[in-house]
Image 1 (tube, rainbow, N blue to C red):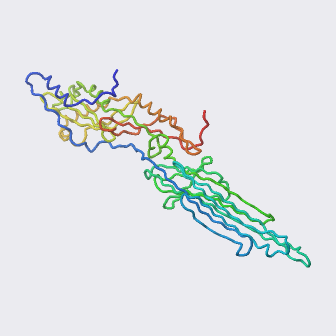
Image 2 (image 1 turned 120 degrees about the vertical axis):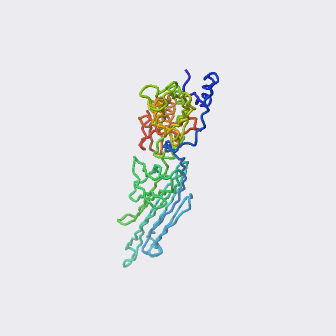
Image 3 (image 1 turned 60 degrees about the vertical axis):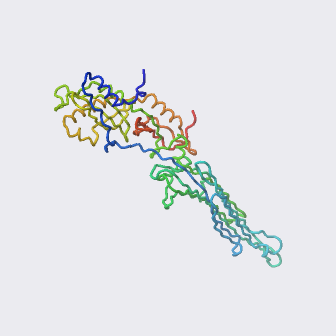
Length: 459
């Protein structure tokens, strides 16, 4: 059995010629139907929210400050705040020592010390950007002895303190369409310090509060644009409390990626505006034209009583064609009758998917045909032809099932330590557009993936 998907649209002029040849004798052949005018204005609009290809660009920059003192003297203090260069390793070091040696009586003394080190190391990969933060603060208490009566027995202490902050900033440019749903996925390690801070902002300074899923942060942002993810760690130490020396070393990492970009790379096409994953099946217009032509063959809806009034009782259809138009379909019927020139009629309708088949619904007379719309009997006949034409369907199996299975096979999509899974429900019909030309419908379906969640263990 030949699949209806392989049929081709029936050419109205060929059928008209055939009818002329079979009319016999010297009867005058009906005139050929004129070429349709411009497409009517009531063609259903395209309602498929096709996604725009996303892009991800990112570069990290480091900066920081250092603050410390080894004694109360101004010469034993420091404070510096420095900014680094884009994409380059940032390093800031400072230290100070006390003057215990100069003040000591005898040789029993120890130099007080304060030291601060901040390092920011940028990291970049395909579809991600990040940095590693390192902050080290060290302080050592100094002492010296002074003479008491005859010997150097009185001991004096110098307290020291140090602090340092390492800050990284990932500047991100998301390409695509503003307003599309998007999430920045921020993976962090070492962020349990009491002086850890992270922020997500856009170029206008608007802040986006991230939510936590497992150990990963998610920031919902409004699609394409420029964003900044900044984080810092601060180390602080002091010898107060009797400790001779104290040191704090902090290290943290930040890596940022885009959910939309990761989905596009995994499924092989841009997600829709709402992050749904889509697939399409092309259906030739002939798959609807052929069964429609068969359903209308010999059909004379106005022949039986009560009829359609007027002189249209002998009207029938001798040619049918279907083509994709906007987000729907345009059907052209050529109506014929005794002693009547062929009447070309254009109908427009929407498309739906029911029982795994493509169907035309709400088929109605297109705008711009006063020669039909101003005649009540002809309008009544056309409406009955439209009802009969709407009864046909073009099966989508097996190609719809194969396309959906192929898309599901691309899940789960891993984004950092989280995953997006395919839904358990079947793909939903989104809408249609013309395929490469109007001779075929491109039928779109969408899968709504799960939210980002911890990846399940392999079975």
